[in-house]
Structure formats: C-alpha cells, structure tokens
Amino acid sequence: MIHFVLLIVCAVAIYLSCEWFVNAVEWLGERLNVGKMAVGTILAAFGTALPESVVTLVAVTTGATDEAKDIGVGAAMGGPLALSTIAYGVTGAMLMLKRRRERIAAGPGATPAGTRNEESLGSPADMKRLAKDQNGSCRSSP
Image (cartoon, rainbow, N blue to C red):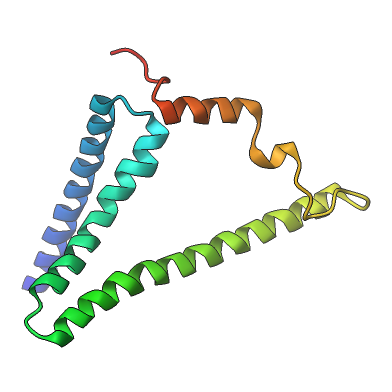
C-alpha cells in the first residue's frame, strides 16, 4: 500500500515540477525577449535534456570503478544515438506517408515525388513568421 501512495505522491510532484518548469521557461523567454518559437525549440529543449546530461556527467565523473565510468560514457553516447535513430525513422516514415498521400490526391500526371517546389519550404507568411520568431521582434509590448 505504501508503494501505491508513494507512486501517487511522486506523480503529483512530477506534474507540479513540469508545470513550474514550463512557466519558468516562458518567463525566461520573456525576460530574454526571445520569440515563442525559439523558447520552445531552444530553451525548453535544453531544459528537458539537462537532467539526462547531469546524470551522465555524474556517472562519468564520480564513478568509483572503470565499469561505472564506462556506463556513463555508454549513456552519453547511446542515449542520443538511440533517440535520434527512432526520431529519424519516425520522421522518415511520416514524410513518406505524406508524400504518398499527396501523390494519390494529385492523381496521374502530377509532379514527381522527388521534385522540390516553393511550397515544400512553406508559404511566404510562414517564412515571415519564423523569421520574426528567430529574431524576437514578434513580441508584444507588456
């Protein structure tokens, strides 16, 4: 029974920590005058990767034996490799499915799947919005 109570308490603590983390990242982006897209893609990504990086650093620097240090090195090399392999696979599969759907919807005589066109990069409005987000000028005055 105590394990179940601890599980619930820890789940609540994790949820509250996530809420506080997201709030803190938003305020940091506001203070640094960074666009919302940049806050999500840079600050939030760094913050979510930081715990894993610290665990790996501690394993490498404080390992009592060579085997313990090797585990830290393996985590540093293997974690990002495994995640990127999965991410690349999922991204590639989604792109292939999207392209197949577009080809079926376009019908016979459509542009071949490997041909790039201007729409593949996004609309001019999307590009303008991304450019504003990257330089932080889309922030409204408080």
